Image 1 (cartoon, rainbow, N blue to C red):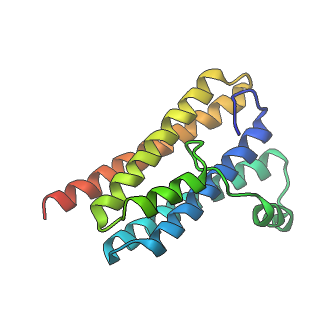
Image 2: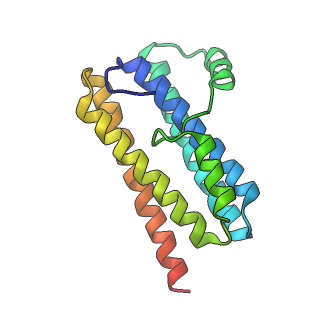
Length: 163
């Protein structure tokens, strides 16, 4: 779990693992959702997280000047996906899906906004505590990406409300 005391490479590895956990959760949520709209929303969210993972991977490999994709792919397959972006265990998120049935796109978007807001606050806290200046920049960039996600989710939610 990230604390803000990591060096840049460790921060990237931990961020990658959290993005992977969130992506896998959104994929599972899509399969358990009660409507086609909710399934699509969660599938789209999983795709966003996949883009974050690709971004983090490219940063990691460029820092190491390592263009060898095979090693990173091996790491990616073995990396646990037990924690989501906001530091919330994926198991806890899965219980939420089961407890609060996601019946429509609005429910899916509300849950996603909650997750993305927690992720933003988590990265904000890490940026404030970061002892490595480069790690701080990464945390701030991840905050900016979470802000974009929240904005996009809000636009999607407003579209639903206006239907």
